[in-house]
Length: 406
Image (cartoon, rainbow, N blue to C red; front, side):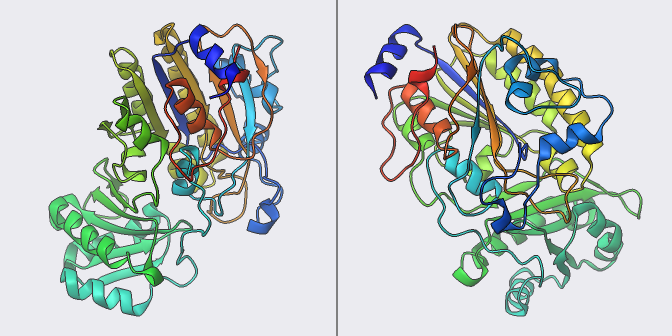
């Protein structure tokens, strides 16, 4: 730690840090956005331009409109916290690369995708042989559309729906009543084993259970389970856990890190539920990190190219954020950020390579305003490690912002 951060540690000894990831809330194309086909993207800005009303008073107080001009939301003269733009140094624009980089890992090679071709015949044949189910689908599709197209056939025949998306994922659908949840998980475990091979290696295998009997009635349930690749190195989460600190996971964090570095975990039924769980965690007595992912922004609105729904989800988040701010104590620090963009006004259904926001708030902070733009998401984990006096694992990236917080 620097002399400045040691002084800050003495003056502001935070006991708990809450890191909330608004999944996919980009704030404008990164410098290399054109290399990813994403020039001109701006998730937050285009949402603001697309909706008539945008009521986010708590994010406004924290300085979001100071960081990024918004049509309906004015910048405030004296924000309640600090704010900054973060750039991703890893190659890719995936959930896992974004989160892993926050906790110190730079991904050099993007995860493989099968968006354009579907999965290779050799993989499909082996998966059919090992699971005992004929596979239908095998293409890129939205989760709701693939159910409308093929769920009735799966229910009638026992076949298995396999599909992908613009992400590095292999997804398997299963009706909870006819396919059985236990069987779905078994098949996903087999798929995860097969896709550890380099030529088939996807970031995540995802179990997508659903209920319903006919078109128009199918609904995905909260029993989703992600089988992610474990991080390729030690992260800040591992360092915190090894130092005897709590690392609480809310939402997808447990899956994204394959359980590595996590001490306790809760799954969320929705982003609102995730915020309610975070508020409950803030009422507990613990020392360490509460790491939260709110996936609805990405899954329900970004990928489905629905700026109105995305804007309304941000309003629901803001309301719960107000409750959280009231719950936080003098020894708490809050960081709000994102893992990539997913511009709901852009072409296709892919994530977008964008800068992301960082909002920092604590009752003990006397200062506020804009921090220097960072060249990596790794400043998040580095700051958390610095707060608790924990050494960053070898080979990780990111410099602490702690000495800049007054």
